[in-house]
Amino acid sequence: MKSNPHKLTVIDGETLMDKRLPPTKFCVDTLLPQGLCILGGSPKVGKSWMVLDLCVRVAQGAPLWGLPTSKGAVLYLCLEDSQRRIQERLKAITISRDGLF
Image (cartoon, rainbow, N blue to C red; front, side, top):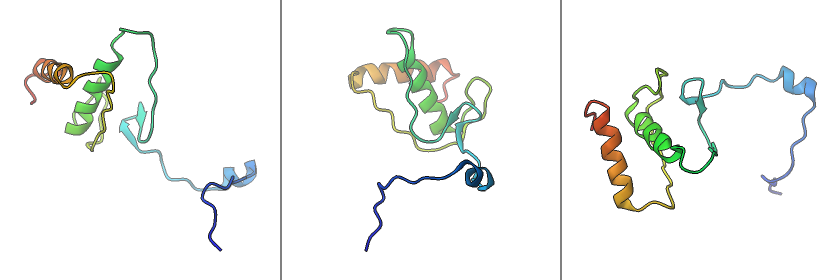
């Protein structure tokens, strides 16, 4: 019989406190853990610009706001932007960072 991967797992507090868990891995040290993160905020405050810059820095292993990043693959889903808009933003971000691209 196969186990159901969607079955609810129950653990009591004492067992959880005694469990040795691996340390959290971060894309941006102490700021952004690996995995799914959701960013929300008011319209037109720069969320897309910030996330694109973050993605470029993680892909290059470059620091973000003085914090080290773990170089790795990124997936940038910008479902409302055209390729031209993304290209223009990438140019602006990378040129403003001392021509890193």
